[in-house]
Length: 425
Ligand code: ARJ
Image (cartoon, rainbow, N blue to C red; front, side):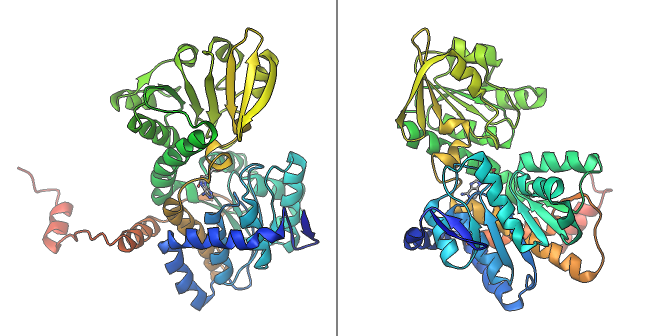
């Protein structure tokens, strides 16, 4: 372990060169971020701001970190999941002078120690994925709230937590819900999760997906993405849901919908994508087929009740990377991937850079917006804010430009027609 007090703690600084190559590769796929970096390196909108971030330490996140630093910010960082840190990327960031506390496979105790360290810079902005950092600030270091002007949140689960906090009057500074940008949830959550989840399952198992009964729990944006891609690979997709409209959508999109109690008997592969705990529990494990593969792509590791699996297992062994074989007392083998943590980040590399390009453009622009709000001297309320619709269109337009895709423009006559409610048959 390489540790410099007040600066970094990473697995091995000697990995920095490998990490730099990974980040350079990601940069070559993230043209929107590179354009924003070039633009804001000139104007330094984040100069004088100290940002503490808690988000998966991947090559894509490193591009965000470099961009925040290029715009003038002082940055400190930790990972938001014990299994998603890429040690080479962490080493490269430490080597570039970023305060970073992250290594792969850390304990839950060390996870919170890392968050504590990132707060030593006395941040005035926070950047979360899952709200663990902002929650730590509120719970453990409430005095920091006085100098924090705002925060941003990356993911659905975090936005849920923050809205609940705001409803309780317990949120003590404004937060922008990056997740709720159209250029985030409609791309990252759907196509990002779809590809990276299958990538994680394939890396951990190498199984053929065609012909498998592939059970997806939850047909929100993430579950839908996974189901669509699994279907595209030739799997028979079964969806389980609690929400009637989501179940109907899944049905009309060609998925079979049934209760988990029934799906448990048929599934060859199970993926949870609900954001809710105890989606797969003891009675489900008890009815699964020999050889069933179980994993999660929701934010926290509570969707699959692992204690229940342990309770019915007579033994377990790691059969491959990110793949543990549990043998039940009646002799069936059940394979749990990535210890029930985000399979796409723990067993693969998370979403592809191309889609994180838009998610992180929203993060970056939202941090700048908070700094601008602060400079304007007109503070916001302690609420959860959406990103402005113009930001979505601007980022989408930038992305299209980098893909050399042109779109049409409305003529003045068309605009007039749209606004004219009197025009009918
Ligand atoms: C960093 C990633 C990556 C990646 O945006 C996604 C989200 O909402 C998360 C829930 O924790 C994960 C996050 N994500 C997916 N892929 N963050 N780098 N490559």
